[in-house]
Each structure stands twice: as C-alpha cells, then as structure tokens.
Length: 481
Image (cartoon, rainbow, N blue to C red; front, side):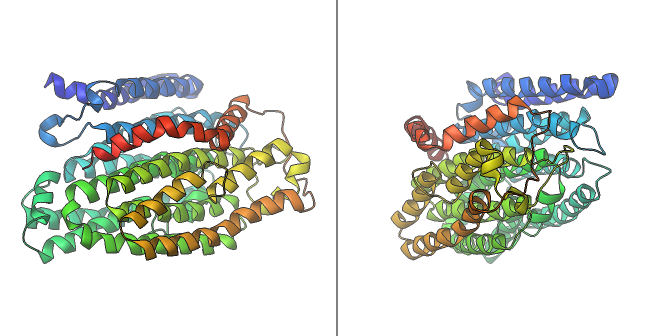
C-alpha cells in the first residue's frame, strides 16, 4: 500500500494542497487571494517534482486502476505547467476587469481540475478514467462561469455544463456496453476482448466511448460548445481550457485507443480519420469569418486537434510520439496567443476582443504585434518557426502507416487553415491603426516575460529543444505499446 501511495504522490500533493488552501481561503477570505494563488503554483511545482521516482516508474497502483508510466508523467508535466500559467495570469486580468474580483477559490478549482486531468492520463480502468474526467469537468464548469456578474460567463458555464453532462452520459453508456461485452472495466481485459472474436456490442460501445472522448477534445462533430465557452469564459480560464484540459483529453484518448482498444484499431481508425479531416476543414473554414479573437482561437483549437488526430490514426509508436510533440508545441503556442489576448485592453483597462482592434498594432505596440505574428505563423505551421516541425511529424507518421491519401488531404487542409492566421498578421501590419488597444498603467511584467519565453521557444531557436524532446516523447509513446 505504501508503494501504491508513492506512485500517486503527485495526486496526493495536489489533493493535500487543494484541501489546505481551501481552508486558508475560507478563513482568510478575499484578502488571501494572492497568497493562495502563489501557494497553488508552489503546490503544482511540488507535484511536478513528485513525478520523479515511483510516479513515473511504470507501476500499476491499486490493482491496475492507474498507470504511472512515462506517458502519464510526460502529460502531467504539460498539465501542471499550463495550469500554473493559468493561475499566474489571473490576478491582473480580474484586477483590471470591472464587475468581479478574483476570489481565492479560483486557484483551488484549478488544482482540483489538475488532479482530475492527472487521473485521466493515468487511468488503467474505465471507472478511474470516468472519475478523473468528472472531477476535471465539475471544476471546469464552475471556472467557466466564474465571473458571476458577466452574462457571457454565466452562459458559457451553463452551456458547458449541459453539453458536458450529455457527453458524459454518452461516454458512460459506452463504458457500460464495453463492460457488458468484455466482463471488465480494466484496460488489459478490454484489450483481450477486442482481440478475440468479433462482437457487435463491443464495437457499438467503442463508438460511444470515442464520441464522449471527441467532446472533451472538441473534435467535429462534438465541437459545438467550444466557440461559445472560449468566448464567454474569463480569458485565464479559456487559456486553461485550450492548454491543460486539451492535454488531458488527448492523453486520455491516446491511452483508451491504444491500450484498451488497440486490437480494434481498424474499427476506430475510421472514426478518427473522419473526425480528423472534419476538424481540420471545419475549423479552418469556420475561423475565416470570425470577428472575435477568442472565437477564432476556439476554431483554431478545433483545427489543430484535427492534425493531432492524424498521428493517432497511424496507431503506431511513431504516430503517438508525433501527437505528443504536436500537443507540446501547441500548448506553448496557445499559451503565448492567449497571453497576447490578455494585453488587448483599452484606455479604461477593459478587455477588447475584436480582431478589428488589432489594426495597425505593429505601429502602436510593435513588440506585442511581433509576438502575435510569431504565434500565428507557428500555428499555421510555416517554417522556420517550431510549429512546422510537429505538423510535419504527424503527416510523416500517417504516411508511414500507409495512410498516404489521408496525409495528403490533411496537408491541403493546413493550407486552407493558414488563411485566417495570415489575416491576423495582415490586420496588424497593413491596416490603418485603430488606436483601440493602448497600454494601461498596470502592465504585468510576469505576463510579458511569459510571452517572451513562449516566443523564444517557438522561434527557430526552439529547434534546439528537439534533441531533448524527442527521447522523452519516444519513451512516453513506447509506454502505451
């Protein structure tokens, strides 16, 4: 039992931290917000340190309910880092936004969501997966509607809750079918059942499970919640949804597809290919007409999930490693983009989200415009920026798996998607200045430092990170096979 506890030490650190900080928030009230926020970041760092040791040794704690392997450890590092950034950027956002103040419950909810995300990527059993998913989702519903006096935030939370409950029911129904026809909720037994005689019930259960997962990763046709929730939720929360939550959902999808349902790759590959191409093209086309930068980034996330699914469709170690590389670089690009969005404020300090307000930004805020241009070019996969490397990797993995036509159609979709990214750059550099976005007197140097770091990582210098990144992604991918 003690060894089991050591293997889940990151989750224990986060749980103890969240409970203690919840008490601090209750006793300290509003005045404890900054203390709780920075303490939460420290707890996340502690959980990250706890990953080194039994928590990444490849063990099976609690009878195989969880898996503490290199894959889970890799995903958790990304989750904890993105969660920490989402906590750090919140105070300045709420301080400059009228209507609601940041309350100490915010970082506590972030920690609870991080616990659920960690369980999602570590699950070795359908029930453990569902518990982690629900813990992450329940915290996310509250975070989406955190600005109580903002109608858009309340609407975002309600939509996310209603549609999330529907998707949760679909997933649970799929799990019940898989359990009924395999006799177990453990991934190993389920994989053995899929490797045996063909069962229609198992295939139907597979379809429902993948439908539930598709909702969490915002893949077409289960993407409908994404634009409204991204636009209505507070920007730091949207940042969390687009980064940490996305890593957890992709990690969960990879583990279920390759470990629990690996022998049924032929059956689920068709679903993944459809979802991939539909997400690539729908995300690209729907983004073209957007006027709100957060909605555009929502469709961008749908588009990018399509590319990540190309690596999953390959169902190989190479493809899985390409997905992990893609999601890693995507998290950096997304965090950078939303950090720039946080700087879009008028003279009164209130957020400005219209794309038109970026007109002529290169002349009024040249540094900010340059960073945003780098993130847009990188998201489009334009060399020599780092975003080109993982996109090429997923195309290559799909082609190596014999899915040449699929890779070709996906590559054409990346050209379509480049249009709306280039539209942002054109607006900033070639349109007449709108003079709407001006610097207020409360600039956060931490946010500017994070933007600079993200820009440096996705610059050509970021290719130096491939050498240490490749062995890590390869080891993580190998853990699933």
